[in-house]
Length: 361
Image 1 (cartoon, rainbow, N blue to C red):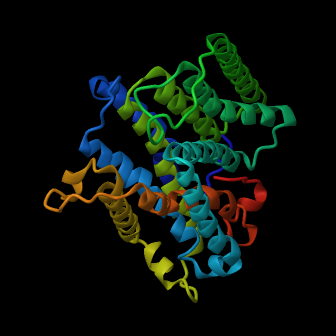
Image 2 (image 1 turned 30 degrees about the vertical axis):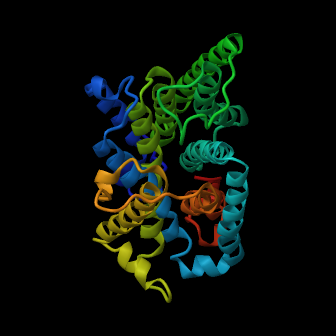
């Protein structure tokens, strides 16, 4: 078998980039009553899935940008302008209406999630010499694997879950149109399977990580949005399959680039040292805890037991104040979504394999 196109450590990539969607689906099938058709998420599930994975993974971007003095100096304008522009745009959007703000943020988030899967596929395709049509089928498959469930969600109507808040998507009742997209979905899968079988017979080899990324995307998005109709099922498949691989990607990048202490990067050298994973995780968990604590105290007021707010007096925040507070609290997410489209394209301080074809992750 030909060598596989690993980007760092094979074990790390298998466990934390390729395995999460399959492991999440396995857990759901083991405990169906806990996940299927469940509208409410228990506090324990919220802490693990939302706070420690979904919110925490956003802060790993810091290690690739603001904590890296060299990267910040090279991209100072982008790294300074995006948070400022993001906050102003957020205030304007929320001032129009809170529904408009969350709807806009939801669609930006969906785009970010879709692009990450495409990015990982490109990573693991970088050494392949497949022809134009083979690459085109892969591209269509990875995109449609994510876009079709979103189309289904829009055309089928509200589910027992949402991306951020109620009504953050626009729904259309178009059953006939949905059938067309569904037929195209399964035709796409059939074409992809035939292409893979043909290449295996022809080359006597298989690109395991690329195939795992594509199949993992298919199963996590299909089962998370279409097959199951529960908040816990959607969250574990959506969050785990997205957040953990991104954390692993940043960790692999750090191990490749900060092994030797450099001027201005001593902090990152310590973080990405042999036992630095503990500090890496504790730091992003701390940032996530602080952010979610502020969200809960000022806006949501849903997890007071988690943050021990019961002893504090209730605080009423005016709508005018919320138009500034909500965009400010959402700024780490907004910045993460936008920056992610830039930071992995910076060739001079990116992975060594960036010049071999990676688009975005």
